[in-house]
Length: 216
Image: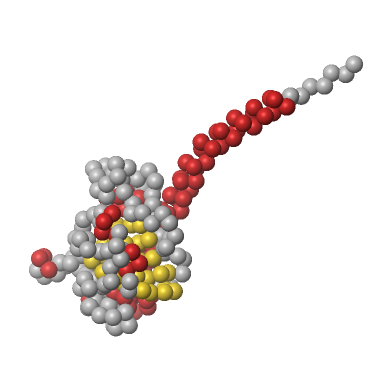
């Protein structure tokens, strides 16, 4: 008589059940990690693109964020003019797209309430890669750190949303849930990042945003 070797149906089902349990436990973490890496890459790319736009504008038109004036999007020497002229903008809106820049006029964090409500005075730009850049048009002009009188230095602020209307639409925070923290670490990057801009510079405007930018 021949003896056949193999697994019984019960053994196969038990093995598949174990694999299913392990997959269910690890897949959410893996997906969050992958999504966080995508947000981080898009954020770095957006910062670089806006920085390159103002640098190119200085080379071609000889004015930077420091030389801008208050005005409409189609007026020369405005922040909006730099963005629309030097970047691939597919749509603009003035309804704020849910971002409120109030309370972000210096190098301080934007808390959740600052981005919760639409602001009628915002300019919001939608780029062809899905990234959104929004700022308070009423205050985004003459953005400089080099004013003759230090009291008149004005660092302008805004937010970058790396995937537009698509969720989760959450501002990035440190692991302890705050915008700013000593030795801030961000375990799970989200899609909204506070930024500040002045002269030819665009930088993160919270410890959490900085942690994501400079992390490996």
